Length: 86
Image (cartoon, rainbow, N blue to C red; front, top):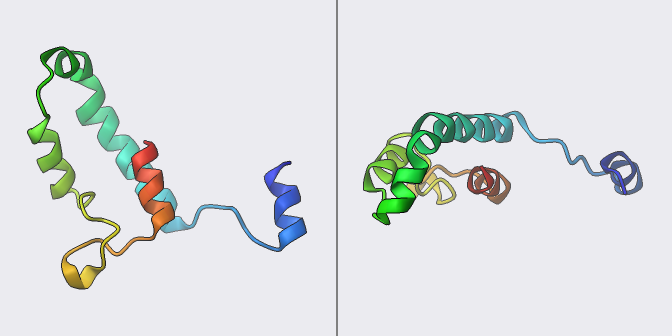
């Protein structure tokens, strides 16, 4: 069943919001620039990528689903899933 049919049948929109698109595009760009270039070497070394976790935190991706009042990003679960998927 296509998204169009589901949208018409349920009245719900399955389009990504601007925020969700921005998060998806931002994490995709991060992965292209920081993860992919040396993924084979990191895999072979079997070392935890502390440097990447620090960069993810600097970009605001760590804790993004937690409320802002606790230092998180306050984004919804769909946005979080989009980031994880990338």
